[in-house]
Image 1 (tube, rainbow, N blue to C red):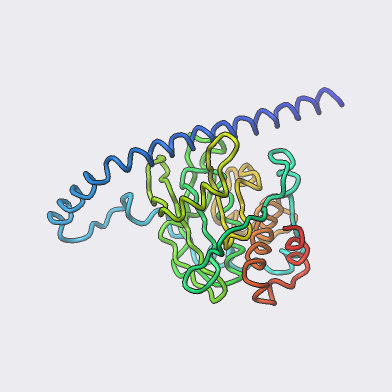
Image 2: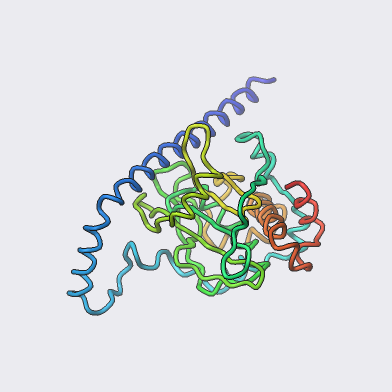
Amino acid sequence: MSKAARLREKTARERIAAQQAAAKRAEARRRMLIFGSSIVVVIAVVVGLVVAYNLRSPSSSSTAGGVHGTVLSASTAAEITSVPAATLNQIGGGSILSYQGTVYTGPPIVKISGTRLTSDGKPEMLYIGAEYCPYCGAMRWAMAVALSRFGHFTTPFRGFHSSSTDVDPNTPTLTFYQAGYTSKYLTFVPVENETISEKLLQPTTSAQQAIWQKYDTQSDGYTGYPFVDFGNETALKGPIYDPAVLKGLTWAQVASDLHDPSSPVARAADGAANYITAAICHMTGNKPGSVCTSSAITSLESSL
């Protein structure tokens, strides 16, 4: 191996180690926040009642409980939701496995077993992430592309950036906080657990927390972001593509690149979208057939 190659390999290892260490520090902070929130919840309720009494009309400003991000243009939103099936089939798994090989030893989405997770009479896709998290930022593009093949978002996409002080700072992304989605095949339940400043935003329910802890607790005792449970049949338990491919891009540029199968963005985000699509098809009994019988999806579903 040449000296240049050794240096590149060392740099890659150092980058991955730094990312994983940062993720663990963030998880430790999250646990402290959850513990602390149980102590102050009564105070928060009392303060909330006082504020509600004194502020009889809703505020127009954005708060921790308000809508986050910047509404994306209609053209950008349309590009996110209309990546052609031909493009997705051409990409297949994209660059996912090459990235996985530098971080994990297992497949990007793994089988799990438990009581079938459903909501409103349909299989449930549960996502738990955080707005500051760059890995969640990367995965939201893939989830938006995949979910758009099974239904449609009923609220506008809102652009956001991950934390400026985390690894892969200011990753351009979307937020699923207060996002609406409808499908006759599945129910999508997004939980943006923390804000950009790593404060509690959407607490998990006891049932969601139990699922997260059961299927995502690592050897060090921590759970992490992002976590996606597909009906308690399969789960995505961490980042599966490098957020660095999004560095410096605008939301519109990312959305446009999703349509170019030669772009690093498409190879990563669309590849991840195909794995997510395969996991959704697995839990919906391969419905709809127009999506689930495509060549890329049948190939990836057989690997789950």
